[in-house]
Length: 356
Image (cartoon, rainbow, N blue to C red; front, top):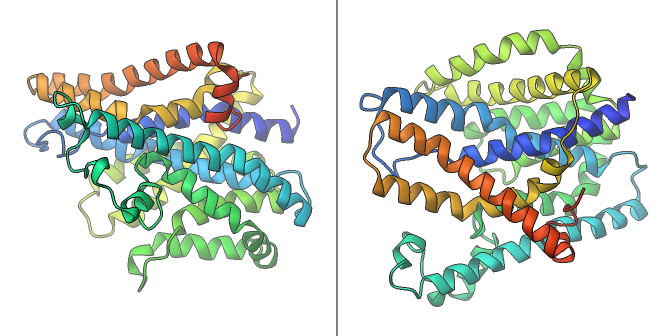
């Protein structure tokens, strides 16, 4: 397997596991759902925090890393290339972003008119029927931290980064790795900065991936050289991250753990692929649909389970593991049915990612 194929296969393989990671980030049972304390439910508390707030937190940074890498991959970046890339991203980012947010707006609008289920879809949200122009702008992530379909903040940030891609290219080309190092330091100490730098986290990981493409450096080869150190170091850092959560410096250690975890995951998968592990094309192609579809369904399943079931260590653990697994299976089943019956429609709503 060539270095180029190994990088592509590593990205292709990790798409679905990383989406599962995103689902488990959202599976976290916070105080919005149940009054959780370490003293009342110690086992559940540790699992809930360790998985959702530590282990799977590498998922979104790696998606930004891969997006930056792929945007500049195998190309001499110029005006013609950029125009072609933008046209491609309109199809893969902007159109799905608009469709899925409009879909959720419409869904909330209609279900909020049904008295029996209105409470499940309203909560802290203002009724869609009462939205102002500003509210609609916020629903699309304009002037707000999250769009109404909140996991799509990732696509919103990517769209902005694509617009800024020429600036990112010239910044990386002129500063080499020092520019990425600067972004990394700013991200690490983001809470100490005098002002909030919008997109800093997204820019750092997107730029890191872009650096490998622009400098024509094989990231699987670079990370593979430190395979043994990171494989030994990451589990120790993850465990320490859990026990340091309440310390004043915890945020810095947590961010360092995310970086080491991402490198560890890439190096492990690339080694496995070189040893003959295969990519599951079906799951990989379904990844975006699972990403787009898992909320608000997951939140609804969690809310119903927490309201209807008695609280105990075992029950909370079953809800924590069962809700995301059930939602993923529902999404995969829907994907298979819809992709079989409406392939052209699925191609549009998934940004041309459906099919194998």
